[in-house]
Image 1 (cartoon, rainbow, N blue to C red):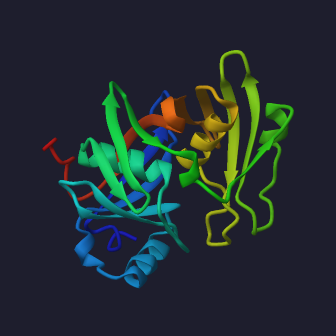
Image 2: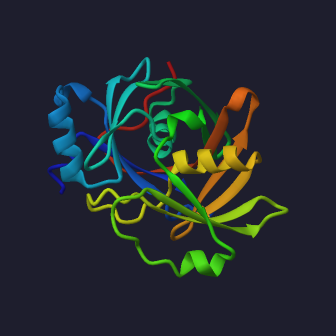
Length: 227
C-alpha cells in the first residue's frame, strides 16, 4: 500500500467536530501518470478508497473521479476534499463547473440534485433503527436516514453504495446529503456512519451547498497555494 500511495495525497473529508472520522479520499495530483480511463479505474480499484480523484489541471481545477468500480461524473466528498487540497475557487467536472469556497474550518462546494442520480433516500422512524441496520445485499444505492432533531435540522444517516466493489458502507457521502437536503428543502446537519459531519444549505435555482471539515492524512506535498 505504501508504494501505491507514492504521489497520492490522502485526505479525510467531512471530519467530525473533534477532527476524527471523515471519508478517506485519494488525490493523484499528476493525472498524466494515468492517462487512460482503464488505467485510472485499475489504480482506483487497487487503492480501494470509496473515491479516487485524478487531477488533470491543478490551476483550473479539472478533475476525474473514480470509485473502485466505476467512473463518476460528480461526487460530493471528492469535490470538497480536492477543492480544499488545491485551494481553488472551482472545479471542472464532466457535469460542469462546481463552485467551491472556504469558510473558516469548513470547505464548501455547490452542486445540483440532477448530478446525483441512482440513489434511494430511505427514511426511518428513529436513530436507533438506522444504527441497527445491517449492510443490505448489493444492487441498490441506499441512503438510510432518520431525524435526530427535526426542529434543528439534525439527521442521522448511513450510506450503502451497493456496488459490490469492496465498499460496503460509505463513511460520508456529499452527493447523497445534497439530494436529501434538496428533497427536504432545508439546511441539514448530518452525522453519518461512525461520526462524520456533513452540512448542507439549499440555495436559489436548485443549487445546494455541501460543506465539512477536511484533514490531510498523508501525501507527497503540501496544499497548492491559491493561484
